[in-house]
Length: 92
Image 1 (cartoon, rainbow, N blue to C red):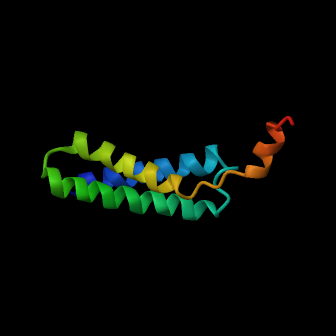
Image 2: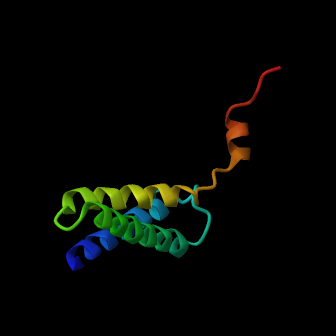
């Protein structure tokens, strides 16, 4: 279980770091909040996957933790709707 927790933590840090660094316009909150949310989500969903599937399913629980981290981090994304309106004006 310790190896799995380490894998979940690395996945969470990777997802949060990638979101904060690659999409800074969408994630206007502090980078630490984005990374911490991804880390906690990966640990939580990975542990839940481990509890459901049982021990020895590392190849199934790591993608579950990545998916959970991506889903919860996506809730933090705040696209700027004003810039979208400027890019795509409506014609009368």
